[in-house]
Length: 334
Image (cartoon, rainbow, N blue to C red):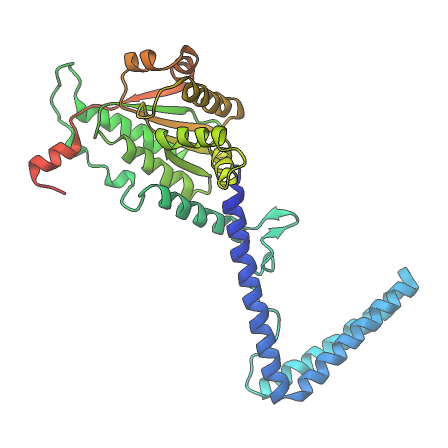
């Protein structure tokens, strides 16, 4: 699993802020206790002096400092018991002035032996979902909310039963999300307007992001605009942001490219699209593309190199039925 640097930085900053808040609270508690029970301050000072002395002794004697260390350890235990008694007598818990941690495992550093702690992973996952929500409305999305009642149970003009087709598509998407990983395939959602392509793509995105994978959603128009800005606005005020966007398209675990075919088709956009699609294939990143274009439309619109990648490296899920938005209007639904 790869990490989005911006989202990881936000998660680390949240942990750092928690650490700062806990340190401030500990300092407040220590001031409170020392003012009310000065003997606690004296005991703390004695513990500090004892530890400094044994550290100095260890540096001087090296491996021969074992006895001094044991003596200091015993002395500290006595002082700690006295501190606990003083705190209890003053109405405070024994650990009231100890260091405070939101995560005892990593002591609010976010890492254990150089590897991300569970607390950092959880925050990263939450921030990933938040980031995705800002790009795609995933609040009401989810496989459980995909309503198959909008798909006819009788054959259409091509002999296809939309309900059966979409039941298979739904099952495939649910399984894809549940098993998503480095061995997953790329998906091409193909079908007319209003058949649920974006809804199911969002459902996959929600499920995958909640498992901690980095997911980026964007429309084909917006993605191509980013590539154009990178080319024609190099060194401009927003160049860093644009470069960051394109890196995210390239580096995320799952890219959802929505509405392929709505972007302007030029030599440049064809080149940019090929670079993105082929680059993710080479890097192992997974991609879901949705489009209203038919197979013939794709071949007419895009260069053979792009079509070859889409036909050879993507599992095609064909959507069937009538425009759900039109059906809702017919039924007086929102």
